[in-house]
Image (spheres, rainbow, N blue to C red):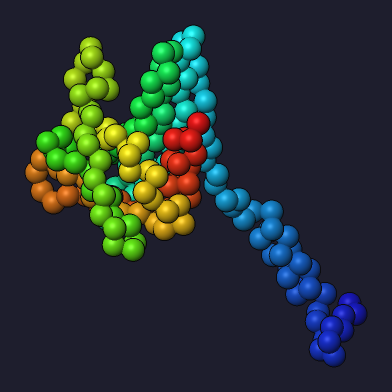
Length: 176
């Protein structure tokens, strides 16, 4: 087989094909960025729910789900909440304590626990907590990542790092 010359150096055809194949694989198989979206659901006539979901990892690598949502009631009142769900279910939130939000610039904010408002019919599971973030969101700069400290009944608080993209989505939910 003939050799191919590239910039004065000789490249063998098999190496050339292998290099080209690797480039194609990198383009085709590279993961696309994941974009979470704000979803809109009409729960019943006149009541809208807007939400954004993120999967997060705590400081020990355990998985959490963060759901920011805004529920607009038929009469026009609205709540903006952040629901946090711990997986596995071996965690128990201390619902007497607020959620602590600390920006990477050192600003500390708190959000009131409203877990008792999740359901009137059944008690909220221990690994689920909900916080009123309506007054906190306007104080956050979407470009600055956030650190959440989740109060637990036993053991140390759990730490979650919130990327700026999640904050932007939360603010988009609130603005609806």
